[in-house]
Image (cartoon, rainbow, N blue to C red):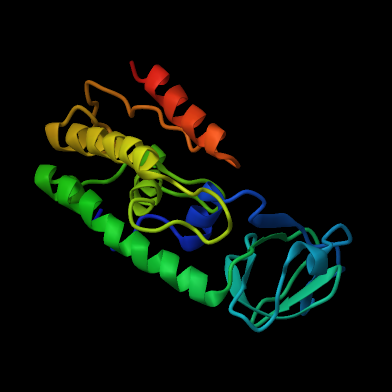
Length: 224
């Protein structure tokens, strides 16, 4: 499988780092081609869904998406997206500029991953399933991309505000993973086995300076 220009989508990065950034549920209209998503518990106005700012609505079931053009408390209309009863939806509360900025920094960070994969020929094999993203979950390479991105950019949603010490801990974790990929200790190709497994990482969130310090200390204890 060829190395990619990016290993995670902006919505994955935003929801990884940001508290209450995503709304999801299922369409409650009759369908089969309803123009607007209907969800009685949406409270979309108060929760921050905005039309005409580049905010993206996803029909996860059908694999379609479009910019939000209108919304009420319980409905959202998006360009080119229709709905059948029971279709799953996802919307992340960031505008088009924020989405484009995150996409840019994901591309910047992906270069580090590609350098490690090229070093071992991992761009030419079939990757194991745990490496790759799904419609609802982030794979291992996606997680690397998202965490590496945080060295360059912090999502503008209030969390996290990573200080120098916290960024250094994430960079240390990234360096360990990339070194294991290069050495072959961590093998992402289907059917191959490395001698190690991915080191665990946590994306704890903080709301005060004290909590930020505690997160760093917790991470140090976990990695002794």
